[in-house]
Length: 295
Image (tube, rainbow, N blue to C red):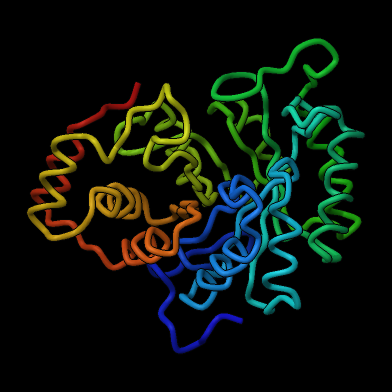
């Protein structure tokens, strides 16, 4: 259970009607711990003790949902669990697209069982139209309207609380607005602002912005924020880590940004959470703003 005396890391913002700390926790890396189950459970509990109440996972993150259940159940009422659908694992363990409406329903049902909840607060639909990651082909190329209709039915049935989108462009988000979109997860960082138009649309409509790859390191094609000379110099000047500079810039850039940095390291988790208290000087923000421009 989160401690009410512990400040929310990064302050708070709204996600699907819930008040959450602006620095949450992304569970993906816990699936790659090579069987270090106790270490993964400890990381999740450490995050919650530090004030994190927004845990991001996905149906296709292998063992993550079971770890979340075992570490944190029974869940505190203020804990917001967010999952993602649109892919699954085949018999060999490879990640494959699973975009058809009936597959989305199966994934939600599986998440409910594994997490041990009657409702997932938010379910993000991971589209597979463009990189990074999976690209849908054949019968996996499904109109977003068909997918949203299925997720809306699950929301009406009370199995999910709200619908989010992931890996979408501004046109897709605009078309989806009538379905009621709570958040958008797109690749975005200090050095990769190709989705700035999507962020602007989220800001216009009060939609939470949840950037993945916030430091650019999850995909080889993304620039690494922590290696940028200006970021490194800024960090040295104000006495923080380059990663903290990258996260603090994201928090300062847009007030409804919610971060979900993931790690399997207790030290890095503490650093990520402490980034919520970093205040970048105006001159530093001006210099960092110049590092990338919207495409």
